[in-house]
Amino acid sequence: MMNYLMTMRLFNLSKSAVLKTSRISLIFRPLTYSTRRFQSLHFSGHENRLRLSLFQRNTNVRYYSSKEDPNSMKLRPQLLVAIYMSFFMGGCLLFAIVYRELDESKQRWKGVERVKDPLQTGRAQMIQYKDTMLPIFVEKILDDVENFESKETDIWVVSFPRSGTTMLQEMVDLVNSEGDFVRVQTKTLEERFPYFEYVYPGIKSIEKTDSPRLIKSHLPLNLLPKSVREGKGKVIYIARNPKDTCVSYFHFVQLLKPMFRFTGNFNEFFDRFVNGKVPYGPWWRHVKEFWDIRDSSNILFLKYEDIVEDMGGTVLTIAEFLGKDIHPMEIKMIAEHCSFNQMKVNPNLNFSWWKETGIADKKGEDFIRKGKVGNWREMFDVNQNLQMETMKYLKLNECGLRFNEGDKTTEEE
Image 1 (cartoon, one colour):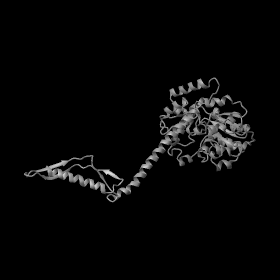
Image 2 (image 1 turned 180 degrees about the vertical axis):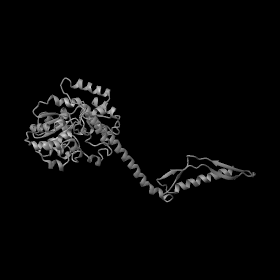
Image 3 (image 1 turned 90 degrees about the vertical axis):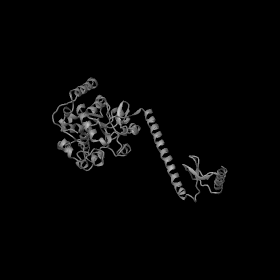
Image 4 (image 1 turned 60 degrees about the vertical axis):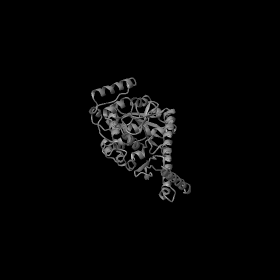
């Protein structure tokens, strides 16, 4: 027993000496020793050998000096960089979350509410503002829209989406330029007739455009610039029967699936259209606001079905509204140029570059799709037709707005 005690004492003294004389590194790591065995401890007078195991789990720490573990010093800067980068990335993420929450709170204070459709993937694609659904890209420019200064010489083409807007824009451009076909054949429609509230080219760019400015917008009357509502500039509005509009709008959303990311079918889209849950909806209020002021001197209200039935007469009506003298031959040329068959193959009008740039689905239908009024008959069921008729009766019956919903073949956007 005495031999054992002396051995343990010498072991502890040696351990203390090592710890006092060595250079202790700042880097250390715990090591777990499973067992330490002291063997061959013989007691006098006995031949039996006693094996003694000392378990010291989680109590022993091994210290290294820089000379003992040189790799630890090399890893230390890398470890610090990784820690700092983790803190930095976490801080950036936290800042982004806080900024987004503050931004949404600020927009809600202005009356803007982001709307997330469960059938749309990704982030919210719409906002609701003054009881109107709008695409998300309008969210940050509402003040710029309201304060935009329209000029007396400005010409606005306004419509609910998929109401024949492209056809009317081309007519207005040719009439206003007195038949300048070189202009329309060398520039795309987006360059000649910018989309007012869209991010490209943007309101700031439109403000710098020389007069007379041609501007397209899908905004309802109550959200157009204050100067427009006060009568500055001429506004040509085109309306289309809601059934064909709904069908065309659905195919348009399918074409622009990379942007809209709508995964639903026609029945689901129809429900949203009727209930005003599509961009620029509700449809009925959009058309009714302009129908109610159709007698204003700076407003020309047109119906899509009337245009395709008498293209030449529409060209003459537009010319009279804009104060332009136009030759009968020019009327014929413009009407032919704006026909469905010509527009469908015109690279400056059919927006074929959308598929090339990834805005539109490369496998989707064309922007200019079919030439038929009454195409809704191929999509609607009896119940959907009843719902649409009910909506028209409740919202438009008193104001007297009626549409041709026939099935004859005509031109269509």
